[in-house]
Amino acid sequence: MILTSSGDDAMNLYEIDNVSKVFRNRTVLSIDKLVLEQGRIYAILGPNGAGKTTLLRILNLLDRPDTGDIRFMGSLFTPGFRSWEISRRMCMVFQRPLMFKTTVYNNIAYGLKLRKYSRRQIDKTVRETLDFVGMTDFMHYPALKLSGGEMQRVALARALVTRPEVLLLDEPTANLDPHSVQIIEEIVRKHHEEYGTSVVVVTHNLFQARRMADEVILLVNGELVEQADAAIFFDNPRDERSRAFLDGTMVY
Ligand SMILES: Nc1ncnc2c1ncn2[C@@H]1O[C@H](COP(=O)(O)OP(=O)(O)OP(=O)(O)O)[C@@H](O)[C@H]1O
Ligand SMILES: [Mg+2]
Image 1 (tube, rainbow, N blue to C red):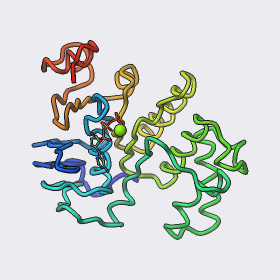
Image 2: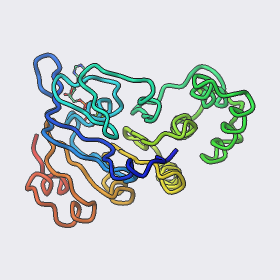
Image 3: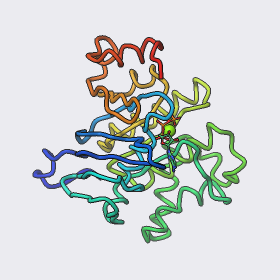
Image 4: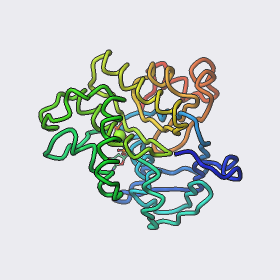
């Protein structure tokens, strides 16, 4: 669903100010300022433990930061505040998708049932989405029996079926073969183009970031090292640490 009022169009998707997250006395995320615009694809890169998943969970309003403010489409979220009305406009696909112990169809229908769609609406939307991700043949299959790549497609379908304005993807193609990677990227791109969905994708796959992202954000040790247009980031990064990260010579 795209925003209707013209006033919203100029609004930033997210604005983050002085956000930090501490686990067991260790600051794992500390971001002074981050602005994400609507309708773009962002890739978040960074070494293991850099805080990428932590940031994504905060963007999804799933976890509270210990300090700082988050604005989503102009609405301010102080730590701890969560609104179902706002959360339903975002959808996150997790690093390890959990399937419900039921059919592929029911897994995808779940979010629509929660939103009190009618049976007819649910059936129509689920079938459209299955088709969108190329999983129609698996409709009545038990989701837990799917292969990793198939499961990832169902996880994506489960997110897309609710037509989120923002899609937050945490390593959606880790462990997938090149063809499955291509399928997932294509699904995300198609959704982005058809519905104007904003996308934030965490990935260790630099080729994927280059293929998909308009902008790249590099996190190292919980800090935002660089945010730049993808072409600039990959060809001519400003920060020494970005260069080292891309070269594979970063020491951490
Ligand atoms: N619930 C938690 N409790 C304690 N420590 C945590 C928790 N979640 C994350 N951390 C720590 O915070 C740091 C950042 O974790 P995070 O999962 O955000 O990293 P990441 O960038 O997603 O790494 P990866 O690439 O390995 O997925 C890590 O050092 C991790 O151990
Ligand atoms: Mg992670």
